[in-house]
Image (cartoon, rainbow, N blue to C red; front, side, top):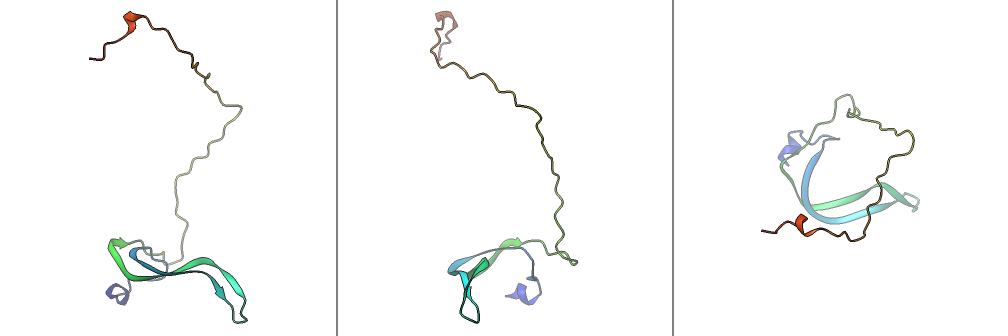
Length: 102
């Protein structure tokens, strides 16, 4: 609660929490009584704690910018080379080629 009062839990901040699930809701009722599906299920927790080191990054002040990552596009031209399937027939080995297990 102290972190919330100090302003550390702003909208969009990522945090790692622990607790017990109390209720899960995937639907909601409109004012006219129709059932609507939630875009994201709502989970209610009890006994929630923020783990040590659980405060993640703050959102960007100008909005969420897409995270830049290095991407490689692999395109393959033609058919890939495939190794020949090995034979499953037993192979005779000369006694001189055997290695003692000790």
